Image (cartoon, rainbow over all chains, first blue to last red):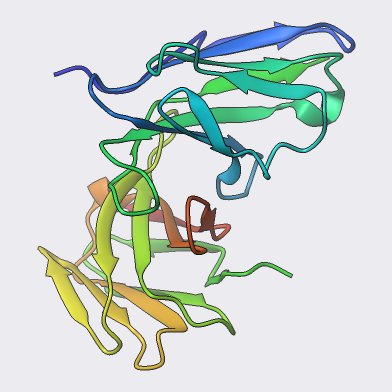
Length: 115
Length: 110
C-alpha cells in the first residue's frame, strides 16, 4: 500500500516568494502532522489536523505560515514571503487516530531552500 | 534548553561493536518513542516504551525506559552497516504535540 507522499521533493525559491508544499497521507488516516527539520536537529512540530480542522497550530513560527486540509485528506503547507531561515526539510506524517495515541507514519519530506 | 537531550550527538564505530545511546530529560513522561531516520527519508518508529523500568527488544536493539520515566537508552549489539542512521527519541507532551530530541547520528563502518 502507498505510504505518505510529499511533493515536491525539492523546492528552491528566492527570498520573498510564496511556496506551497503538499502532503498526501495514507488513505483513511484522520490525523495529519507537519514538522520542520533543520540541519542537525530533530523534527520540530508545526501543526496537527484532526480531519479538516487544525486541532493544534501552536508550532507555526509566525503568521507567514499557514496550512489547510479542506477535505480531510490532502494537506498543503503555505509559506508567504519566504526567508532564508525557512530553509529546512518539511516533513508530513499521518496516523490512523490522533491525540498522540496512533503511530505516525512519515513521508520523505520536501527540502526547501530559500536563496 | 531542549526538553530531550540525546547523547552522544555523533558516533562512528566498526561493524560488530556494541553501542549505547541515551535520551535524557528532567521531565516525567507517560511514554517515549524511538525512531530511526535514514538520509532522504522520514523517521520510522522503532518502539514505544510505556512503563518505568520497561525493557523491549527488537532483534539486536534493546530499549530501556528509566524507572522514573525521565530517560531512556538504546543498546545495539553487534552493529551492522545497515544500522547507520539518525536515532531520535520523542515524547508526546499531553495531547497532539510530539517533541523530538536532536538525535544521535550513528555511522557503522564495514
